[in-house]
Image (cartoon, rainbow, N blue to C red; front, side):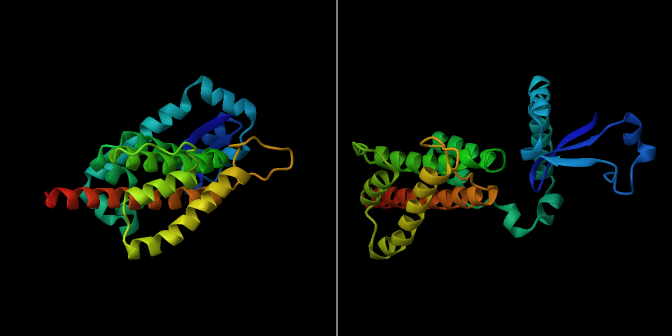
Length: 237
């Protein structure tokens, strides 16, 4: 078996051929891919996964990807050619968390991003962990202890109170709260947070992406409110 490991719009994949002669330059199709069989991550056999781990191939791919990203980011012509929605990440969790010096928030956000394709079930769980982490940071900044029962809804209520939202913000928060409840519901019923039964449904990557994106947007909103409150307090002194 010959081929290579790659990553594309649908996540990690393996492009394989059975014979070495099939992947020589002379045998490739016009686009260089026609003679390969493309297999996405969820369809990889166990023996492939074991081989990838033994040879540390995922780390090598990640290193190559990081080099490519840094190269593209340093090239202003390539960066300018990207669509507007690709030039600035949305939601900008890392940028806002960096300003507030919240490394744990960044760590959880990156975990959630990685799990969307590789582990949608885990991504739902991590989406909730992201919000719980942000709420705890908000409370810690204000010197407020976490609730005795630190569930996501309880942490949200405490953080909302600490941020002292005005009428317009509370109106917006009604919708945000519904999203939080939906994410919490997804973790309980679609992730493995409380174990999995034989008939339980597994979440799709699309479902996981929706939950993670919503959690990221909510996290950014809370962190920005925290920044605004701090700036308002400092200017009033």
